[in-house]
Image 1 (spheres, rainbow, N blue to C red):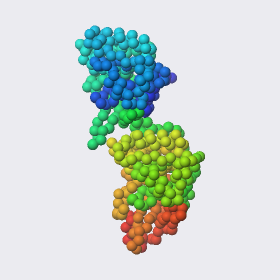
Image 2: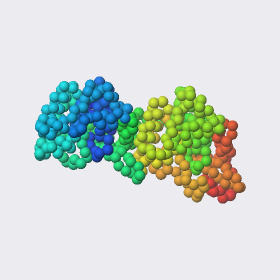
Image 3: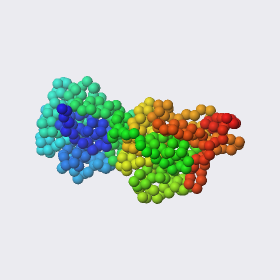
Image 4: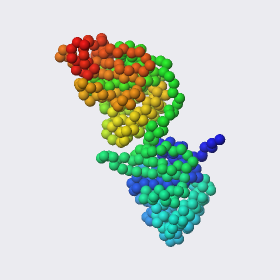
Length: 479
């Protein structure tokens, strides 16, 4: 019978999920990275979050100067609480002790301070400095072992902070229970922070790289969605009902409405009606069946205006709690941050209608493009399991053209329903059209129909007159 290890919750959003539940109580970890990677903020945030839960943290440094400059920098972060200094979070410099008396004296001082403070978390900032002071590798191993044993004896978890210059085969790496590696690197012209758990003894941490950011709130980690949700968080189930699209005439084309808990892709060129169809879909939101607009291109104010022009009262839906709008400007986004932001909002409000307008925003947020299929697979599987009926949009590059391209074939295969909107020129007149290309496990109307706009907004009208090439937008006369 397996036994779960007792954990210390770090208080860093997303980090406990990566670690498999948090830091193991009484275990020791190396937190490493080059200067500026975020080690100090990480460790201090964990220390103050530990104090918030009623425990005590001891922060030992090898700084020659006072801690005042450190406190000035930490004072810009929300988690820092100066009232806890010297009470719940204690800072001790052992620089002079190391210089004058050596490593054994440092161990003795740490032992005394852990006992005196009753600390459950020890942060030792300066492992590289201690290593440089050692005469042999045996001295390094002895120092680390003694600190570990003293802390573990009283159930104190240890974080050794060090530069990434220490090789992976060093004595320190072999002796500790875990190694967390931080990086801050350039990807093109933008800076990207990432974290990797390189060692995790006795626990299953999420492998690979995970992005994180540092803001005034401190550190937030965004576990890779496809790693965290390799399997859905709740059991999936087969759809049993249908959900109205809100667009007149459209439900008949897809066999009586969108299958409940399905994911649909509506794609077409700019101005073809993708957002309008999505607005109609959201217009049927209620307090019992809330909706979410998760968009990238238009601000909430502009979308409210567009909805009003279509006869849809977004203002009223937002005020009564039936609709929430989340806008993600197309600037410097992080793919996993977007994924977690979406899923957190869905779970928090019990969203049942979701419009993602559009998928290209996720693609632009990806630093490593080849993982998009796995990301979308995990995201859509989770939405289905949560019984969210989802419409996503994708913009075709060309208004007219002989070829039609949707997201990559593998991504398209992950979607339940495919709907194409087009501009078609017939007799010197442009017409908007809708074509249903796929509805999973259900019969649908395969004929191209015109769409227009009436008092109730967007609506599906009569079948398009028979012409060849309508799907490309380049009609070539009677079919």
